Image (cartoon, rainbow, N blue to C red; front, side, top):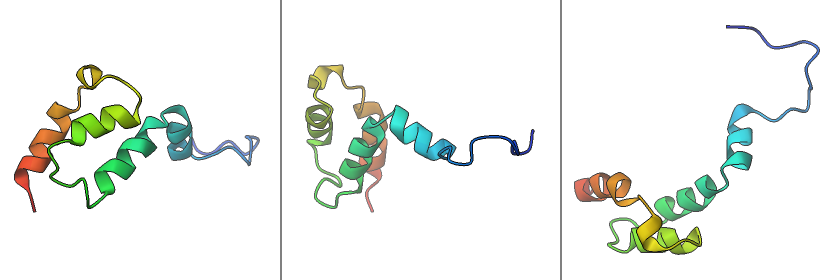
Amino acid sequence: MLGEDPFGDPHRPSDARIELATYPEAIVLTSLFASRYWQNHPQVPTEAAQRLNIAPHQLQLHEIVAPVTEKGP
């Protein structure tokens, strides 16, 4: 693995910040999943689709959320 480029842009954002700028939906979904109100709520996929401004049937979220919500606290 290469070290940091000493001649690189010192103001370049970190890889994590670049990911968030490239994939802003990560912020939308993180805020949804972190909310206590929506934990174990059956309408999480519908709410996620609404926040992303897409039709619920276009969202492939059930496969991701169902195993997490079924485990419970």
